[in-house]
Image 1: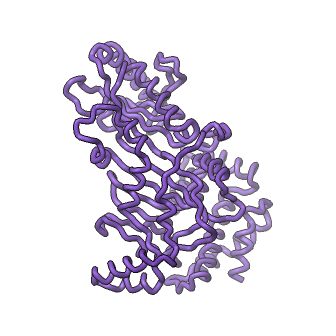
Image 2: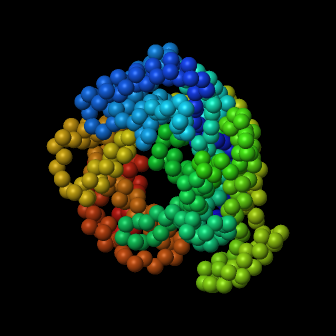
Image 3: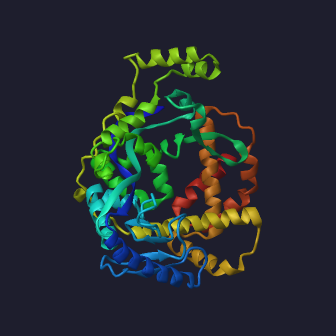
Length: 451
């Protein structure tokens, strides 16, 4: 682990919440719920008739006076109807009142909704939506994610052996970023566990660069001391618990509201996650000894000595406290969630064309209008066309590769320079036409490295 400054927790919050609802009374089930199913079936049929590909949607307020919702032409698994808005996604099923164990309605809260209004208010708003066509309901917790964001550290290549877990090695997955041509391997994060229990670690600042719609959390980071200009990453440590794991904590014969029960015990849930995994401050020599030893006792003794050495930096202790006390009203209103999503969609579209051409070399006649539109947008707002955009990304990756190769003294198995050299002429031509310095800087560096 590289420590760039004293690590600082800049946010702790509920990042994902999935709640199931079951109607309590037969009269409301047959009068209100059945009526809603009839509306949804009509709207679902209308959505199927839309002239588009994939999932199709129609908009309706569902007669609830709670704003517009989008109703999909498809359901989800056992749930026949998929309904969404900017705040949550609801799965609504055709289930029997007496015999079915599944919740009749399952709601997945969007992360930005939980963050912006707070968990309590988000629950109140969704309860209002569900109860409007279910009457009174019983709630159950289906899934919850707790996130702790730490500023000032970066996980490195050998850190995978610095984790000691109470799970089998088969439940541990190190997420690598495999660059083309095999020049180097960079760790992007770690996964521990599967499905019902999952603890993952990843660079949230990098994730935000890839998905601008998630940038809302930066407001809270900044309030807690984060300084973007320093360039230090924020590492997210996220605990995911699903229904099978959640049920272990529910007392036998418990008959009260499960959601409230768990929201009052978030600190215990978080500590439970940390008790399964621990990052131990090992020296590089100790890491190499663990990696090369087949003796379990030897490994345990190395971990034990390191954890009991008071002179070492014990990072995991920083994470152990849970404090999500934060007033969402301090935040500025979320700006243009839709616009951020549109930018993300444009980024994905650009990546799609690059990948499709590499893989298929096809001529997409049906998409030609979109190609022309995107090409013009790039020219108007960023001063590059699609070809120049792609070249700049090749140059940027080349420059990053060379920087990491130099930093870690890696001996590559394939010389990426040969590939980049083939594009040297085109790089030089691009420099004559691109007037956006954000694109030219990596190209200039790449040309310099190759010359």
